[in-house]
Image (cartoon, rainbow, N blue to C red):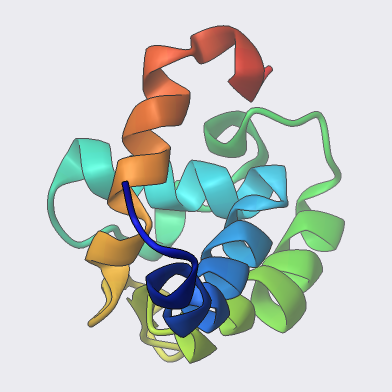
Length: 110
């Protein structure tokens, strides 16, 4: 069993992972990167793809001003603002275990 000392050593990263997973749009983006196993084109960022009945303009604003910058700054994704592409970031693997756990318990994702 991990010690408390090792847990607190990694608590900053855990906080960032939980923050990233705390919003449905960010979870869906990260899930898509697991499923696609590659770079995602900017067109994947649409209401049907993200599973929401949201006005496209509002969704675009939220993604470009909140969710993508948050994931990018945490280095879970690499986001090219020019072409809208998203790929796995340097620290993407830190979120994979929790994404896998959520996938195993699908009802939690809804």
